Image (cartoon, rainbow, N blue to C red):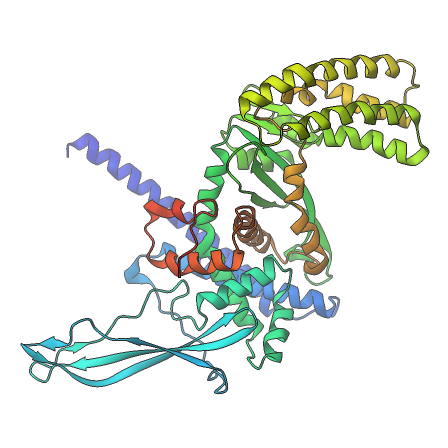
Length: 495
């Protein structure tokens, strides 16, 4: 290695060290803030459910930050965590025993003698049933040289954790797919005869969120590799740290991105952000180039330019006329609905068609309808007084005409944005149970886990089976093969 190469290597290593140091300082500060919030004097302004959700979010965040800090430390400097004292698992639970013995029990040319064993118990859960897994690791000693052999402990997604991946998957699916906050899960498990403290459940959720993040990052890159994307956003209330005493919430937003409906990849990535500002979409998309199918929200406008083309949503254009027709049975709105309906009739006929077939049908049938509709809209808009509800419905379509007609010439572009709006339904259901996100980190963790769960469902997988298998494999899975664990590539293990 010459002097120039050595100098470049030194600069790179110093840069990485500064980055790691800055990240460690940031996480240490974040942990101090979380601890102050957790152990500060309790306020009576929050009701019981709000307090429960705040406390579980803080617990999850603390464990997630600790995991991230430990991952940044060199292995030699890591401080072993003091494990909390556990209560023995209920004796009445069924137990399944696993024997772990060394493959070879010979040493010095003679058989070794079994001198004892270590027994550890982990709590497992299959929907509706708790069982205890007893892991018995025999100790084998050589009488000649006193060599001790014992099967090593299998790697686990939470080191020395009480829960199996089956129970961890159940907690995550219940929280993020079935919309059950941890305080409700705590009550459910207690009724089943297994009291699991909410702080323990929060520790599991926080730690699993950190371990699953590389999968979500890889899924995001897979989504951004496609040239056509749907995007949408929906509000979610978030409790800001400064407001924890009075219980006031702030309107945050959950954004969703998914490849075009006509793409082969079935995946969705959620992105939790503090606001609805368009810069959040810009940060997520980074240097992505392609066609973005969105509604008329102004936050997307700043993204459009040389590298990103806007495609409009006919469902939104149709909705303006539908609302007008539903309000006063407007005949002109009814005619607009009939014209737009012709476009949807054509799209229904070519569902599942190839790109060439879609191009041919759209040019032959959709193009004349589009041209006729534009002439009709232009002619009738001139007869409608400005400022009226009818004028606003016309102006919405005419103002966005270029974006609304992109789909005719680009076979990869769907006619509307309904595909991504359907991926927002789990969020709408969850809002009724979440009340709010306890912190920005909690919202980001929810978005990450929900991305994996919803993507698994889109690919026809049981999210419980998917998460359980992935968390079984992750501790020893090479980073170079992380893409194999993504929902659209994952294969359910054969039994």
